Length: 160
Image (tube, rainbow, N blue to C red; front, side, top):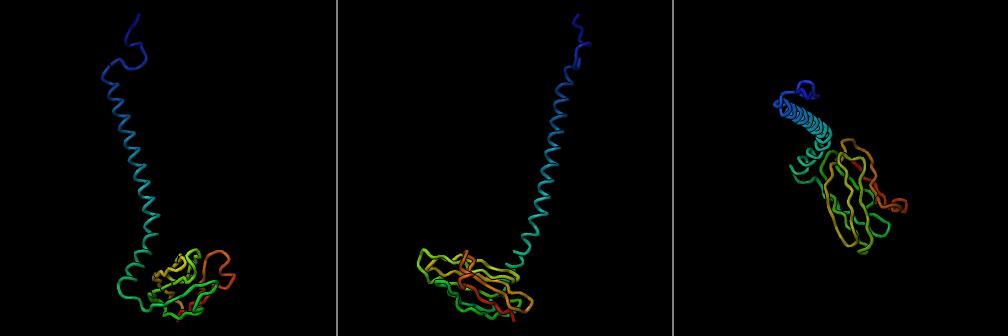
């Protein structure tokens, strides 16, 4: 009545472990391909994002900055309101916030090859280096705290 050849499944007891091994290998191969796809996608996204930063680091640290510019932020003013810089050069900005310790400002450049956005709390001086635009022109800089630019915290960076 109970014939082993008529039961569902395999009659040979050695094929079940082989089938499990084959399924495990297939899962491992599938996991490997998924991992490789994730790594390839990450590389395709991250390499272009890191290339400009690498170029910036090489440019900025290969030689000292062409100029150092001091900027003061106090109340709702930035001084000086017009800055002249050479084109395509590394320029160091030293930004001082002369307000009290609770008053923060953000010095932000725009339109340059590499811009900066420095958060500076009251009584603190911070510095960073930008790579100026290769095209001569007038580019705004400002305090990017909401409402500060509309109250007069703006200036012009003149690339010569």
